[in-house]
Length: 295
Image (tube, rainbow, N blue to C red; front, top):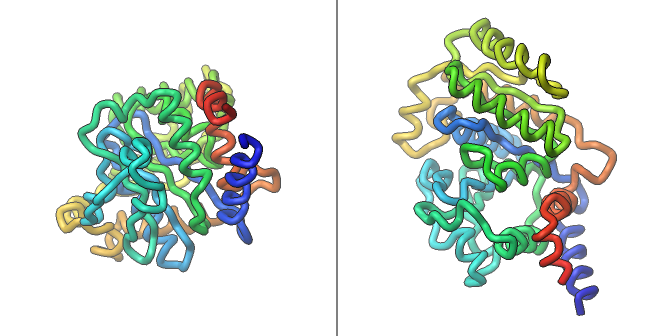
C-alpha cells in the first residue's frame, strides 16, 4: 500500500516536470520590509509575459500578501490544504499573464510553526501537483524560521533581497550564516533593493561580502540593483505589479532585467533542478516529515 502511494506520487511529479525541468528560485531576505514580494512578483510577471509557465508560492504562511498585492481573492489557501479540506490544485489562482499563485493564509499564528505532520502534508501536496511549471518562485516569510530555511535549502537558487539599512544587512548575514554553516547552502544571489544609484547598490553588496568573505564559506553574486522608485508604492496601491502598472519606470526595468538574467541561470544536469527533487529535498532535510511520509 505504501509502495503504491509513493509510486503514484512519483508518477505525478514526473508529469509535472515533463517535458521540461522546473527552475526553482527562493526569494528571501531575513528582514521584513526589504521589498522581496515586489521583487518576486516583478520577476514572475516579466517571465510570464515571455510565455513562461510561472508559479509563485506565497511561503509566508502566517502573513500572506501575494494575492492581496495582485487584487485577487483567495477563497481557500494552504491552511485548507493542510486541514484536508481541499487539494493544492483547488486553491491555485491565476494572476497576470497567466502566472499561477499558491496563496497562503493570513492572520493564523499556527501556520507560522508547522508541526512535522503539517510539514509532511505540505510536501505531499506539492508531490501530487500536476501543473506544468517552468519556474517556481518561492516568496518566503521574514526571519529565519524552519520554513524559510527549508524552502531556501531545497531551491536551486537562493535570492537574498537586501536594502541599505544596518538591520537588513545584519539579518541577511544571519540568514546566509545559518544556511551555509548548518545546511550546506554556499551560493547566494543578491538583489540590492531600493538603492539611489548603481554605485550605492555595489557599496551595499560590498558591505555584505566584507563580512561573509571573512567569516563564512559562502559565494555571493550581485545580480541586480533595483532603484528606489515611488511608482512601486503607486503600483501596490493599484494592486498591480509595477512592471504592468508602470512598465518604463526604473524599478520595472531593473526587475525585468533581473527576470531575464534569472532565466539564463542554468538548471543543473543533476536532478536538483526538477520540481520533484525540490520536493524530495524538502523531505530529506526534514527527518520528522520524511518519517511521516514513509509511514
